[in-house]
Length: 304
Image (cartoon, rainbow, N blue to C red):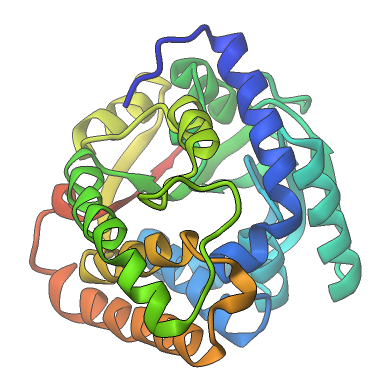
C-alpha cells in the first residue's frame, strides 16, 4: 500500500483530503462523544495500557487527532487532565475545536506535522493516536519526534492501524458490497450517490485514498519503528476481525447511496450489529488468534 509519491506530495494530499472530509467526518464514521464513544475509546486503550490506564495521565498529546474522537472522550472519562491535539489538516483542527467548545472541554488544538512537532522535549506523559500512523510518509522521523516530546517513563499508545493481512481481508466484503449494491439500493429505494460510477465507486475518492493510505503493517514492522526510536516494553496487539468485515460491507453499501435515502432502521442495524460483533471479537477471537490477522493493530511502548 505504498504510494509512489514524494513525502511532501503525500503531506499535501493528506491535508487537502482531510480538509474536505472534516465537515462530514463524524457522521460518516459514526463518531460519538457520549457514553458509547467513551466506552469505545477507553476500551481500546485498556487493551494497550491495562491497569495503568486508570491511574490517569497528566498531559497528553494526540497526533492526527481529526475531529477529537480519542482525546475528547478521554477528557470526559477523566483519563487525561490536559489534552493537546494536533492534525496536519486545518479543517480537522477547526472541527475539533468546535466539538470541544460544544462539549465544554478545554483543549489546545493546533495544526502540526507529526514529523516536526512544535513542542519542547519531555513535554507529555502520554502520546497517542488513532488511525494516523499509516498516513505518515516518514515514520522513522515521526517516531523520533514522539520519543523526543515524551517524558522519561511516558507511554505511546496507537490504535486503528491497518494490518497487511487484515487490509487484504477487508477487500472481500468491499467487493461483495459493490456487486450487491444495485439490488440493495433498489430494496431500500435509495438513489445512487452523486458522482459515482456504475459499480458504486467514487473515482476521485479512490485516487485520493491511494495517496493518503500509504502503509499497512505487520506486527513486527510496526514494533520495529518504536524500537529503533529508542522505546522499550513494545507491545503490538490485534483488534476487530468479524466486526470489521461486517462494518466494511455495510459502509461500502452505504457509500453507493445518497445518504438521505438510507433508512434509519438500516443505520441502527448496521451500528448495533457492529457493536455486537465487536464484543464477539474482544471476548472470543482477540485473546486466541494472532494479531496479524485482525484488521486493526494496536501499539504501545514506553520511553526509558
